[in-house]
Image (cartoon, rainbow, N blue to C red; front, side, top):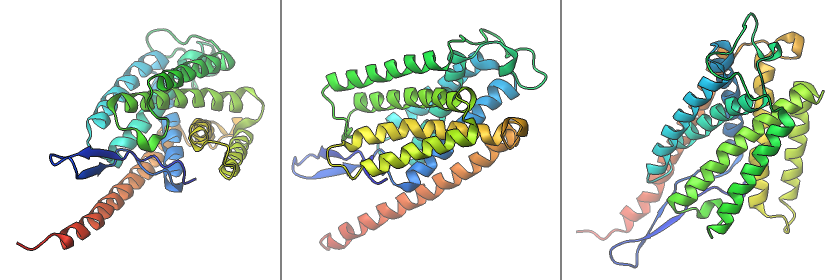
Length: 298
């Protein structure tokens, strides 16, 4: 999926008022982007479960801690003057982790079916609101729609490549956080409550993503809408993949555990981030050479 490309082209007039500098804040949406997105959201699922369930911190404390991490990573990204893969994907990862526990806290309760083996409680504080997946998803969809309405009323473009303001990027990341939380609810519902199981849920989501790819050929369907639908759908794909890696074999998983799965996914994601960083540096160097050659001597 190559469109819409998430590039922020910031045309900034310099002192002369005639020369413009183009700054890039967000990455291009390519196949590598979606692979990294799924890896980050799968890691968000396993890491969120690692803190909340395996380590016994519970949904309440883990949500507070991970939301704080999200705020810190978001501030770093917003203050950055240009695209940095480590900054960008760290925010994506933090929204995935926070979204996992936020969804679990909304939808689950203190019943034994949500506790890891041998556990009798999930840390200090409320054990969960117990709203259930359909109600939780409905609330999150309403919040996401409210963000898009506010985005529309602000007069700023939905074309991701044209986001140039602090407020526009803040709206973008708010939508990312809610969409990742919504995707977790959808993934858990499909895997646990719908009867599809992990493999069935993953196949359903992959099928829906293939439909979106086909719709890219339809001129009347806006690519911006396809991007956001795909962004939401890749989250339940990551959630089901995470559950498949960590859940017991008796429940249809591979029983790799939250710690082992998280470590492997973290290594994969950081390796891809490092590759993206090197490619970005190489691209910048290539763009700079023609300017140096064309610069007059003396």
